[in-house]
Each structure stands twice: as structure tokens, then as C-alpha cells.
Length: 165
Figure 1 (cartoon, helix red, strand yellow):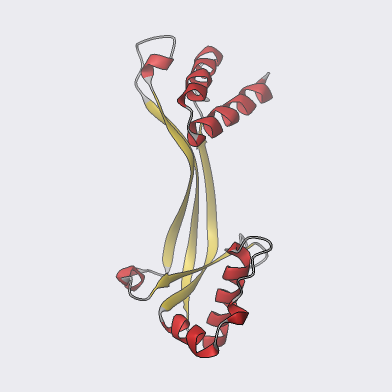
Figure 2 (cartoon, helix red, strand yellow):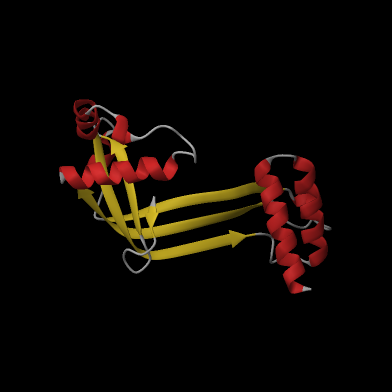
């Protein structure tokens, strides 16, 4: 969960199971990667066979400083906010309805942490370095692929092309 108004670029709030030993390897400086839609682009989709295949994608990298939250009240508040954030609208689930002893046991089984984002980076590779004809051919092939990532990449490529015309 991100709190956009905390820090220069926002603050991420997260948790991990204490049994997952990865948390012991966390450094203060971290990189969180949010992968977006992506799809293989065949060389056969271009107007020439003198090319190499590639990958079109969207991604966001958030560099930041991580801090483990040890204060019980802060942990409880953060977990409550995470649940509220991710539960669908109209859901009847709430951590407020949990027995206190049960919730306390859950809190002991997780590591809660915050990451103050120090440098966000976004990248999109959408065949923008190719000719309009190549881009149109790639879009056509992606639309035939039929999976959600291919459709998303095709739509973004269309928007990219139309903004240049």
C-alpha cells in the first residue's frame, strides 16, 4: 500500500511472514519492482528479417529506504489499513472483528515494514524505436495473441502512435 503524501515520493507499507527468512536479508536501501504488462515481440512481425526479437514491457522501480516497524500499535494500525485497502468494497471482513488474542498472534507472525521512496523510475518499451509500419504490424500480432498482457501492450502502443500523428 502506498501513502502518496508521506515523504517526497510516497511511502510503501508492507508485511512479510516472519517464517519467510527473506526479511533477515533486507538492507536499509531497497529496490521494489512493480512489473506491468509485457510480451515477446517476434522478429517475424517486422517488415524485414534483418532484426532481432525483443520484449515490450512496462515497469516501475521504486528505490527507497526500508525501516522495520516494531511498535505494536503501529503494526496493528498498518495491518488494519492494509486490510481495508485491499478488501473489496462491500466486504464484510475487518480485522476489527477478530478476537484480540487471535489478532495479536497474527501480528507476532509477521514483519511489518515501511519503505520511504527516494527515487521512482518508470520505463516503457513499446517498440517506439521502430517505424510506424513495424509498430502497426506488432500491434496486429499482439491483438491476435489473445492474452491480457498482449492486449494491454497493443493498446498502449496504439495510444503511443496516435499521440505522434
